[in-house]
Figure 1 (cartoon, helix red, strand yellow):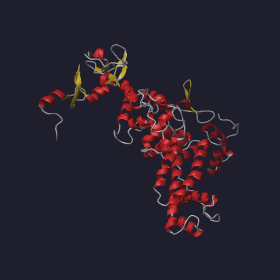
Figure 2 (cartoon, rainbow, N blue to C red):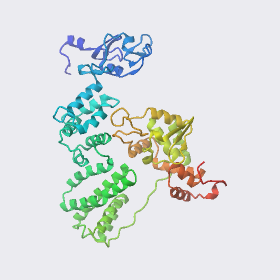
Figure 3 (cartoon, helix red, strand yellow):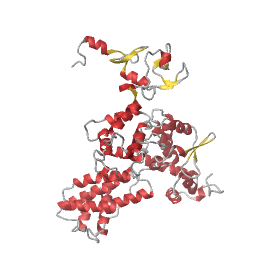
Figure 4 (tube, rainbow, N blue to C red):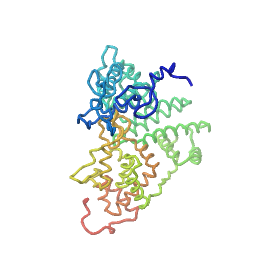
Length: 501
């Protein structure tokens, strides 16, 4: 193994046993309690609070003799200071004895320079957003990530500052790698540099050109582009105007394009075109494929017949509806008990799972909740799902309040002041419901079955209109579920049931 030092004398000069962790590593310096390694020094300098000795709010890198409690540099007897030479902030110092925030500000000033020695005026809100993040070290790491790579943030910001990338959504749809570009685009939307746009529509428009480029037949490209332009994209925009687009809706739109392409390729192998497609070809395709594939191609064929791309006399077989096995009440209560008592389950999953199991909320609505939907009235806690808000019993109320104080993804510019109950990693966005569903499934909570079991249990205890008002459901939905469960009004006690208790 090649040594990182030339001789034993250099080893003694550069390396020592850390007084905190006990491991031998590169020296960061000599503190009152001994030599300290870089990792322990960084961790100590990021510890802030009220010093137990002098009661001042400061960085607490020192250790009190005897009990090892964290104290400030003055009380610990440090001979050095950790004050930023520019702003005076006490903490970890980088080059020029600057704190991480001042260093981040300098690096952003360089990459956002519009070649005139100043930040491009349109990007000033983005600069302010990034500099104000809770953990500037995350911003520095983001700027330094993948040097020389297409996805390097510094290089992309430089191109933006110099006008090489137009400040439009369409320009971002043509860039790669898409994950880095999508993150930067959302930061620009959050800082109001770009107008707000549905991220899933942007994602679909970013994906579509790459898919079209992978199709070899020019006629197929033309047909698929027409299908996307006149059927898939308008449907997505109409859905966005009506309600939030979910990841499953975005995935379904892409699948319609992919399976339509596969159908055209299959026709080509059968020496057919879309215009010459016959009923026997449709029947053969349906016989060879799954129900999901048939449903996606059905959308394409319906559009093709309406736009006269193929014969309007074709008949499409009806689809089948499959339903998941329901969760029993005993299984629902066992899942609730597991989430309430198992402290090893991450708080995010405990809170999200309990809202599903107790209040019958689908994850697409759970992720849209904000901290403002949790209401306090003295000692009582309520969750605003419908009208009136639903009461939150103990110990669930304490769990919710503790979770809000320690939410994830709050330390970077992405969601620095987020009001989402479940902040996501993307700028200004909550958690993805499909990602949350997968995590809950891993701990044994099937979300769809759990939601169905919860709403049916509510209907056993309260009239359907009351459940609809309290949980934010349409009254026709609760009435249908009541009929499917074999319930009726004669199951409830006599009295006034028109309003929620």
